[in-house]
Image 1 (tube, one colour):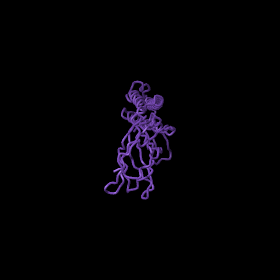
Image 2 (image 1 turned 120 degrees about the vertical axis):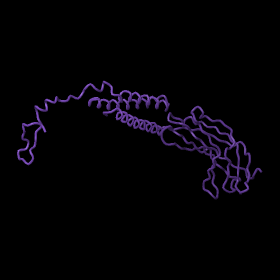
Image 3 (image 1 turned 45 degrees about the vertical axis):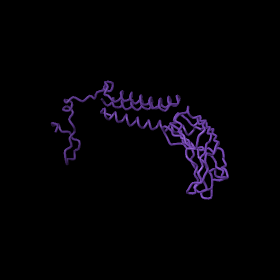
Image 4 (image 1 turned 135 degrees about the vertical axis):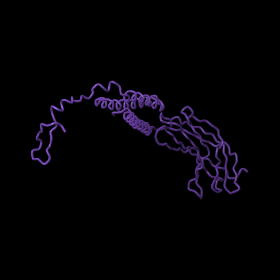
Length: 96
Length: 168
């Protein structure tokens, strides 16, 4: 699951659970059956778990793109020479 | 949220919190429910009125109970427990409460009562003060909800005066 997929999964989980809780309460109150509220809510929880827990392909549409290893050689990391006043001076050497 | 176990635990925790919230809301709605109970109880017969060997007065009664308790039931009611007490004052105690009869109503369909019953539990005094005593019948009810705290209430019914002498 990629980063965006994780965000979506959490959002989806919270929205679905809240919606099923509200729907269950309304149905239970209107039909005047406490047990019906519990059943509707249990259904909502199972549905939410099925949608958000497995690693569906839907959550993997934005894979993380790593830079090619060659890029690191072209743009080496700035090196700080210990004790020297010239901070941030670049060394055109190899990466250590 | 990167692993399925993490997502499952997060969903379970959120579901639990929301279930608690729904139960709290159901219980809170009961606070706005105002029941109108109608009930009567009349003694039809004094089966026995005597002094026990230890000096305490003891009475066994038969009485009619009629009650309409349907209004106690809401969608959040599991069952209703009712009991009838005799209440009186004597020199020893400023309030005596003696339970005579009780009953469990499991459903709204069974909440209309029309019964003639013997006292399940005898009326026994702490002492010997029941001759000529006027006792007050009180109906108590405990509404047990599916979610939330038990609701208790009571209602004074008729008064009844015991005879001036023992029957045996």
